[in-house]
Image (cartoon, rainbow over all chains, first blue to last red; front, side, top):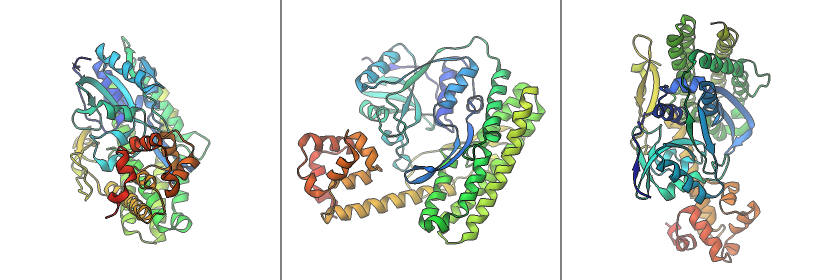
Length: 338
Length: 136
């Protein structure tokens, strides 16, 4: 295969999935920012399911599961996507090369563990990372990884390992790219639908594992960690909450700032002072989340058996939960009237 | 978070030239992007995870050197894997992988099986068998 280098513009982003959506759509002529992609794709969420353990630590997430932002954003914007997996690695590679040869940049789902360009301390077995391949030179693919400041490259063998990582979920060589872009975009409709869904997810799901209820649920579990699992594990559990909250450059507020940026941009697009007020409110909640992470970090570091510190942290979470419940309840009930 | 509050906290971990994009508000309350190269709570959480990993790797290394476990156990920890994950990489049941971690069973493994493990761990078969490198 001869060398290919597509004229792909790389934008450094806070998060991989939004970043890939934004970068791929921009290449195809649809100018959309990262927060816009995140908001229209209803990316913001909160999940805490203590009995689903990841490496022995209760699962917590500040956003919707991988792949959903993409699906929702393209549906609401009217973008038609091609997406496929390949059980046979050889076929997966051929398919990728064939599409590149046609001059199409391709989105891939990969495991972070096998990306040599990332510093070792960030390489865990996380199998739902997204990046764009925009060319090939010799036996190296040219990569636009949204969380990297600049474009990079990767040896074809390493990319194959990353695409065919095992575990949950298995990427199975998944690749995707837009096939048809909309002629006109009804931004208002897309934004309203995105906000309506997030409003529902955060304030109306009648199960304690999801939405703002789950933040309270986590708070109730958190305050008993030292007694229930011991100091060492309690610190690991708490560290995991911080890491999920930070999850690659979300500003320490678990995507709350990205969503506030989305509300801010939407307010301008739709000329709505109300949305701007909501953006300011969410920024304040984001700052509270940061406060939580900061204090939690100190608790982790001290490893103190101090029960009160966990109780204090739990109270901050309860406050976060109330603020978000109120905010998203209001967004859900009023967004369709603007 | 305001633009001038974006943290730039350093850590003892080698993070290379990684920077994160943060969404922040500027002096007029407009959202904008700003680069951060680290934040204390995140650094603490990450250091804590690696301390835990390194402790496990070291404890397993001791057991391999003492002949209680086969080198597979060491490389499993070194590669941040667990038994279900390793089993799916080498196309075996979990109980088989557990068995392969016994030194006496490990000695009887076929060349193909050893090659499979070596490929997953990105090392040569010689390095896998020869555990002298694990003795410090």
